[in-house]
Length: 148
Image (cartoon, rainbow, N blue to C red; front, side, top):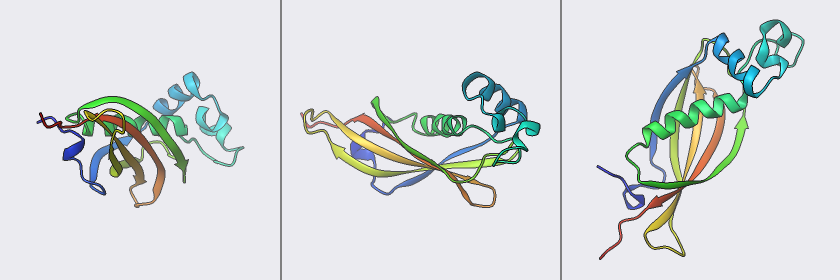
């Protein structure tokens, strides 16, 4: 069943699955996209605020977004409108599981096109102890059911 803006419920929360990054995953991503010392090796990280290897925030956000997109595979998305501010609370470490959940925080019809609307999803990533690791969001342009 294809979901549209009219099928979504404000405040509805849904699980999107989880991810675990190996040290090699973290280092490979960092080497290519975010070559900070704390992402490149445990040894280099020891001399930084992070004290040990940690994943890039961009990597963490990409992993979370990937799981959200898969969880919303039935949603009739026209386009992504924005990546909303990301906040990083604690480092993502190798070989640890991280759970991703999402919640609809804004749903509204388009002012200019009745066949579309705006849906804003807030994304949370938590570690196994339940501590929030990251919060971010996506603003989607979504199709609406239009009366004929």
